[in-house]
Length: 409
Image 1 (spheres, helix red, strand yellow):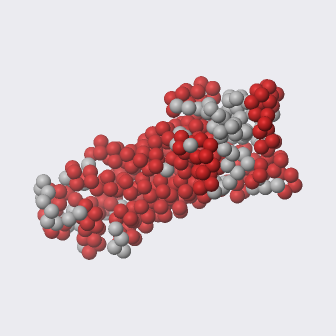
Image 2 (cartoon, helix red, strand yellow):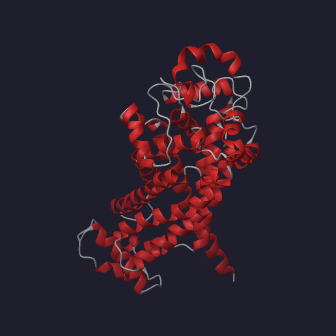
Image 3 (cartoon, helix red, strand yellow):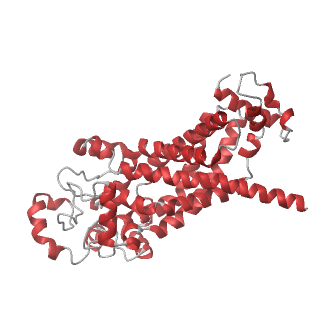
């Protein structure tokens, strides 16, 4: 019997008899495939009971785990954003270690590496709470309808991320711009944005670009995160199932918990890196053509995001390096501090993900699609490992607490 059939058998037997049976009487003992033992059947019998926690438990555990993972890895996410959104050519931020050291040395820890952490925090918890609630509901509904579990895991991650995107995309826009900007009035890197803080950034975006700008790059974010979440949870559920079969019991231990979670997130992160590059460029590159223009607001937008002192000190470098393209974006530039794409770096005058992919490939090749793949791979591995291991741990704690309360009654 195939592994998929065995997993499906677990779900279907639990549905026909929702009570928890003693190990020796487990209905899963009818499996005929030879195993190192009848113990695997005994230990795996209650897996379905464990995999279907109350929705509130799943949402609280997922929200807490996801937020902790995001906060832990925020500095590496900033490094990734700088590498992907850096419009200079050749890029100022190259290797992961060099980028990390440069940002820390020039801009510090809080405003540099942890720029944008506040909107990230505000979007992370409610977003992951919604995600895990929808994921559990969708997964269970599809499995109970007789759909293959692997398809249920993929679809669950897909629909869960779609539901959560309403919350986290606006926070992602603010976070990404503040990460790319770094220090307020930054003398080391001119992203074209100069927000004093999150509140000032929110006001400027709404006033100059309109409220819909908070959902700028929504389609690109969806194209990145839906396949990422689908792949991440499909990989994770499959690896968890294989690990339980290999160990011979449902408790696979902390080492395998970390390994399955980290590899699932890392593989999904690397595969979806091109979509992440396009998303970052669309959300952070200033685009006067796409900016609303009533009563001259488009021109105002281009001027107000520029630090006032930047044209004076960098005028010589700007005129030397980019005079032929100065018309494309009215923001002054210099070698390391620029908002005008240098030769070889495309300006994405489009919200189309596929057009953006073609433009990046045409000018930067495959390497352009995988800008920041190193920090993205590490970030998604550690973030997923933290989130999913904490998720499993907190579920067990909540379950134990619930049992104690029931006994006390």
